[in-house]
Image (cartoon, rainbow, N blue to C red; front, side, top):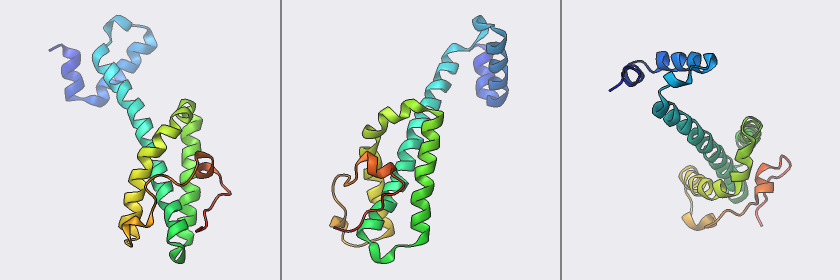
Length: 148
């Protein structure tokens, strides 16, 4: 095991600081390539997972807003607003995530539906099998679904 690998396993923060400095100095031959690649891959996955998590919370509240309308609250309203804004900020920092939105809605809907069932335990068949909202509706600040 190389000293860089041991340092990575023993003191993650020191390893990061050291490798940031190596990059800034252009000392590329000294970089612990495998671990740097692993960390970059992890950062990318974390961004995608954050999008799914934000969408799941948003979808949970949109579902409750539509199907459990008698219990609507300002808390739900502001959670919807907050998640939309946080998703916009995520897209601002990582614009390429916008192109993954449609794919991530499917995963997020399953999670959001489970959360909605847990928080509003009524008939589990109350919520549709697939997402009833378009990506445009999900992100539209003016969209609040009414029960149809």
